[in-house]
Length: 249
Image: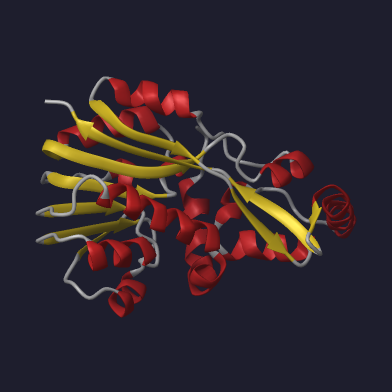
């Protein structure tokens, strides 16, 4: 996958002050991930979270999951956000998770809405196996190819999201899949401009390299209003996939 990590980092860094207000879909995803995990296991020694962002998922985990050591990773400098939100000590590792040299193993590696930004997901999953203890769990959410379908249809802009079958194929050699689930989260905004603001302030537009001219913006808003009006506003659809797997011996 062709992902410009520097662009991703810049746009998420700029979005940090607004992220918690805008990331309603991601917060729903975080709560569902926690629920899936609680149905499996609730005590761990070492936990690694990849792509912790402002710490919403980290906070949920700390409130409901027992662990001795918390290791949190993000591409951006997020320590200020984490310190204000988390109640237990943690180690922050700033950097591209695909390039990190991890020196330990974990009972749980978790990640919410992050793996879709990776250049080589199958290779990364193979690496993660080496950093899980026996019977260690991998819990993560990504998005299906139908994610943000409204934006993709109107602009031809979007990530190349792998299918659920591709994730299964990539996991099959090293992991036993315990849970798979797909869902749809439909958000309503007052206008197409509010949709664009939401995407910008949640960092999702990191793949967009096109300039918004006045004419292009006017056409986009008119088309969005025509095709995706809903309940007095316009809709935007997220399609998360949830996966829980146990490392094979």
